[in-house]
Length: 383
Image (cartoon, rainbow, N blue to C red; front, side, top):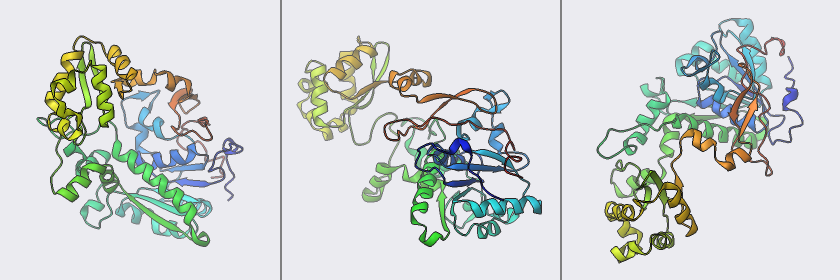
């Protein structure tokens, strides 16, 4: 069996052209990793079981009988269906693994045994093997399914998300899966650079620890001060004003990260802030008085529209933004003008997708092809 490159992945000018990626993963974190590599030009083959990736049916919302969840992260790969309980299908997978530069999978320990992953790994002696796991431990938590929601819960992220008088809150997107997928993609790229003499490298990328790494300043504060971070709603634990303020027709975000930016905000508001409290020139005082500071700002802008706030603040160089809906975000001029939203053919016909956020040599790579049907490429690959 030869792994011929998909013509759609040739002559792209992208950095991973010619890199062969075998995607055995399901749901989101692993497929997100494969999508990032595919967006950068890699030739990806996704192998699904007879029932397909469960995320194909993770709906509503549907679009023409396919879950939009599946459409979101499964472009830039050919689709192969194999029944690994059949020896002939497993042998075909072994051949594919032996030709791959990168293998991505996210099976649990009991699934590893049932699907003979150790045997498959031996068939790929020169591959970078990227394994997404629940945790890096050996206890029961390492053997149990760890969906995004559970990783958010176990990581501590939910304890610092939400308002002080409300319950712990998950992030509104599957952030643990996305962060883990990005770490997995970085691991694959590092492995490709580091393979000594073409020998196999295995990288484990755990969901919970990946999500914990996203705590950044919050976890560092606990580690050095011993104080448990708390929920602050939309406020920042170390900066003020850094959050929403209420205008006449909605909220506007201000992100005053320096004392110079605070002085600019004070100018935009006619000098009312430092007149009210000269101590606010120092960020440490503003953090202590954040609630009083917010009320003072809102006394001035209570009759202003969000549009006027953005105009007045921006004129003085104050970092600010309107709080947009998803549709509003897509309608921003720089989004429309930068080809971030592209139309592509897929298993359900033409659809619009967000392209890679990365610009390669100043250009956003085109989406070459969208998500395909289950098993659509079995014949093409001689399977």
